[in-house]
Length: 226
Ligand SMILES: C[S@@+](CC[C@H](N)C(=O)[O-])C[C@H]1O[C@@H](n2cnc3c(N)ncnc32)[C@H](O)[C@@H]1O
View (cartoon, rainbow, N blue to C red):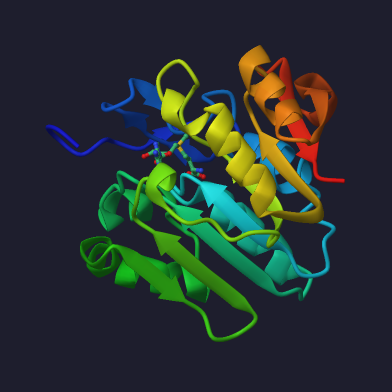
């Protein structure tokens, strides 16, 4: 981060996001951050239906996808294991500002432990039915679990601004982190991303944003491991 801390800004569905000075983009859709999180990541990956989801996320960012997932999964009494990578964490104060009103105990514990976890390089919370581990590291330099994830949330900044999280070798490693039947979901529908996911052996489906209640998002991708 350079300069002042980013300020939270509202999106039309009432959720907040912030602008990244580093990448020159918002962390989530300006047309509705919460709506995109649900339609693309939670529902796109079928995590909302899985009896005990194991989610791997590339980049944790503001934790919006985690909060969306935790809320839905805990609301139906299911267990959740969530692993995430984040190379450039924002301070806890920014996460607290965008999540004002969020009262899930695991989220509150995360806010308490965040800044110390960033200094240590990792954060692990849980003990009950919900388990969270975040590695504050570049995903390209990290070991990924193999055959583990019921869902991969691929949520870097755009391929143009954040190309290193969309390379064919990383897409292949993310495909290998999926359990059979697992689904990678991403908001990007770029041709190179689609081709990289196909080359990684996944069955790729393009979904139309409009059919999933998304404004300003023509298409997104879900890719299943057979
Ligand atoms: C669009 S934001 C993610 C938003 C987040 N999923 C949420 O729900 O709030 C992209 C994130 O990817 C992180 N990132 C970019 N390159 C990365 C890398 N090589 N390894 C790990 N994280 C990375 C960025 O720092 C940023 O936090």
